[in-house]
Length: 72
Length: 208
Image 1 (cartoon, each protein chain N blue to C red):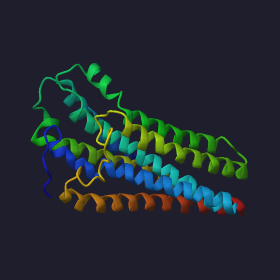
Image 2 (image 1 turned 90 degrees about the horizontal axis):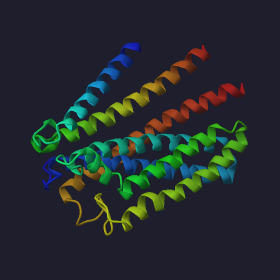
Image 3 (image 1 turned 30 degrees about the vertical axis):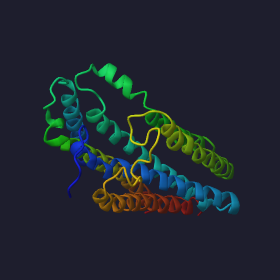
Image 4 (image 1 turned 120 degrees about the vertical axis):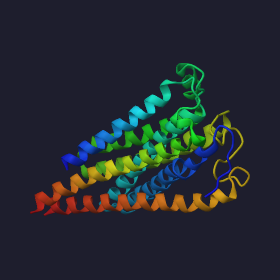
């Protein structure tokens, strides 16, 4: 469980640095997020949704584990 | 799947299958929530109250995801990369759709705060059911009406009906978009059903 938490935190921080990086060089229209018809914007959106739902389900899982422990 | 490539949007139009679906899913979940709130007021069954609460909670999750994905999308389409970010985002922050959606979500946050601050179970259920109807009624002016009567960068400003207008969306995209709405909604309903089952188990344990 701790490993998963660590891993997801790492992925989020990586994603955030990617977004920040793309926003910092504003004068360049050819940065990563704007290349290939801005397809990476779609990638970022999909990753964000999947991460969000994944973290939410992880929280739900933790709640279920707690109830299971109390039941036994 | 091929998509029409418009200037400024180009490939990002594929976000229609994700960002827009989040909001559709949120709207459907909030509708389910208000239906169960009304059912609670008619029947006084506490299970209806639990259903209503969890539909609203998962609706909020989808709303927040819709907002977050929207902010990424708008960073690369609305915000001017040659302008200073302050001015550019200053213009974006005046968007009626953004403000309306933020108000709608804050009203639902207040629903959660109100619920959890009342310890008496019956009183909590009744007050939150009434508040839920109020919150649902406020969804319509904040995210459906006001953004449509003000000028906006967001599709559907002033005169339009984004995503559902026959002239607004390519028919090839419709082929993916409608199943995507159904799919995301089913995912939301499934998560909600997990939460409801968990919460019913908890209630049963408390009664024993």
